Image (cartoon, rainbow, N blue to C red):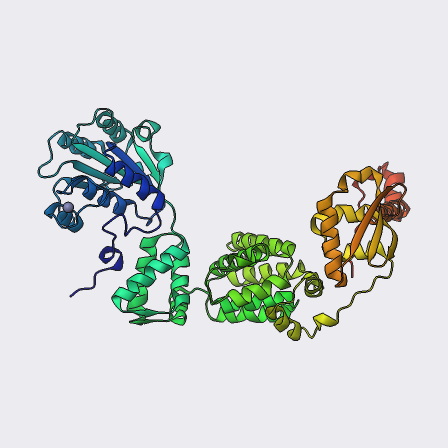
Length: 522
Ligand SMILES: [Zn+2]
């Protein structure tokens, strides 16, 4: 027996079997069961999400010999003929190959005649946006006064190209892209029936590569079966698709966290030797960074995956800000990949950019900011030769330095506008610049207490009073930058070449254009 492709073999025959379109299925089922039928339907959505499958099930529901219902019997000759694609009153047209007005006119003329054996004559017009303007016009006439025995089901990947006059006469449904989870679980069910073993991770990779299209997922799975037989391994899928083993990405992020540029470059070189697609690698890297970010905010969010341990660990090594930045760099790097001298160079530069923007002191700061030390952190701790428990910060009275070294988040402005009055018995008594009294809010104060408590590893209380003429971190910064500005200005005015320009050529220095270049902080 010849091999039947999975997408055809496993094409859902009922609404229940259709995956990932619950809302549309619900609405259609209600309409069918309550006899509220429209004469024209429009299904829009990206390729492979089930538009024509849905259209055929709808056609079956309308014509099943038992009755019009959301649960066609699947046994009568009409149901069977529709499944086999040989029902005479179901007319499927691919508009992409029948764009001309003549073919549409023929079709519509034919629609005037009563159905041969069914209740309704059902026209499924796929990729309907491809029709010419005159073809649409001729269709519109039928849509305006449709014979009662005719149903139109239009499908499109590009609803914007359909005239509004046509859309307004249809009941429109937007079909959703499939989630990787729903694709993955569907593939798992199919393989069980097919008696083929596959590693979960291999299925996850296929689902992601399908970009929301079930049809693409099934055709990749066809290839995978042809390629690896009845044992589908992650390794084989990776080499088949040229995709990337997550191990590489995890190692890259770990190397970035360690500020280990040599290791980052070594990993990149290994990837190049394996002919991994760097475009895909950056896409996956962005996806991984997204997962880590989500985990930081919602720790319980992780779905079932072999990477979970790594994600937990990485989420303690990066601050939210550095994840944001790395994500942005990955996305932009991907965009620039075609402009790079070659993809390998582009990928390398993207990683180096991440490294350049990643403060090397970060792991230490994030350890101390972490309330509970979970096992994953302990693993990292050993690798970095740090004993978290022994970090016992003492306060030397330099409030400005303390504020600048901590990640304070929303309470940063508050901390910067405060001067230290005293510190005793774990109480920070601060004086807030009265011009910024609006910052004296409970949620800011609480946040500040939380950060300090985590940092000093003991309960800290913050007391705030108002004051003026304070020596705050923010005022200090201003004094410093003003000073730097003055020095810079006088340095420029003293410059021999500038003086010469002024004297000999009547040049003028535009004060606002002078900007001190700050030395890189150590
Ligand atoms: Zn039937």
